[in-house]
Image 1 (tube, rainbow, N blue to C red):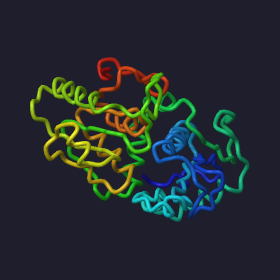
Image 2 (cartoon, rainbow, N blue to C red):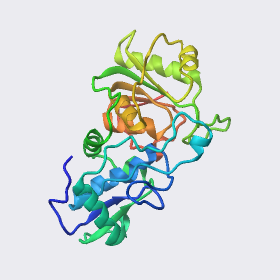
Image 3 (cartoon, rainbow, N blue to C red):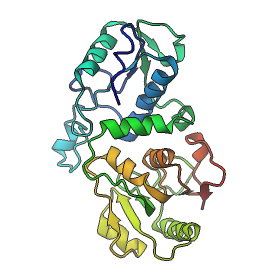
Length: 281
């Protein structure tokens, strides 16, 4: 995606705010990648609607705890995106020094940086703009391990940082039981009309445990090198078996395919319903 600063020299600059402080090459710790995409996506949409320049964000964050705990994924995000171009650095610098206005208060002024932060209304704010976000990801994310060919079922089993709940009110961050995933896989096979579909597994849990619990034999394991490439890979599935996470929602938003969701999940709070595509189980 080409820089937009050749189209404007006076802004507005559409600035995703990902952390409290940001010095261009590194920023203070912030949310996970799935949640960081929301202000980035709204800034992309703002640039399309209002003109001006999109400010390429700083993704690398300062992180010590993951190193101290010896975690495999240090979540510093420094190798996820390509570096800024010269024009993008100029846009970033201009956005730091000009007047700032929050996205909800912006009324079409020039010469200002429009700040986009937080989750807002999740995917309700992004409806109808998936092609813009997808094009930016294709241009920006380092693509080691990217899968560009379609396959049958993308299975997202989220375990590691999700809690088990005995008083389920339909919220996010709840771990689904393996019995639900087994039933969802059967429903996905039924939707596709394929007895032995090609399945790619996406999980933060132990792969051997997950495949054993689900009775899977030699599934394809997501080969991505970072979470944004993994979202792209999941978006290539013809049907997604989704967890209660924004990771699954991003893939479904970008891919537009049928998805199977937990029937107790309050999906509408985050994700606009799609008639005939969203299946509850």
